[in-house]
Length: 96
Length: 109
Image (cartoon, rainbow over all chains, first blue to last red):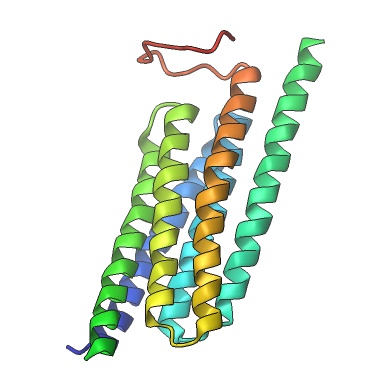
């Protein structure tokens, strides 16, 4: 097995493992039990999506996918920050 | 020869990164409370995706692609700890309780 074949084989297995990981995180997203757990699950989904797109880039050789991965990482970070602020504001609103 | 070595390294890096991602997901499902789950999610997840982006940089011959992959890794390593810290702090203020196995809590709720 030469390097290129090993790379395709590894990328296929990596895509399978990451899809399994996404399913497990979606289970936590559906189950909760609180808003904090769901925000954390969404954050992990975006991080794992970046990894999945990286594995797709390795598998197909299309480096354009990398821009999408960086955009998802940016949007995911901003949405996590916004949702955490919402959680904080909601908690402070209940205390008053 | 050099290309072959880089391809083998990238294959190992992709596999290792995917395993880290799966470990993060298993930790999220199995660990008992939000704070321990955040440990698994933010650390293992970021390292897993970072390793896969390293693999993209290893097999690429285009300088712009390598630069973008490295920028992505740096951004992931900078942003995930901030997001996890912000979320843990917000959850603590919202009254999320740690698991009963916790022995030390240094923040006064």
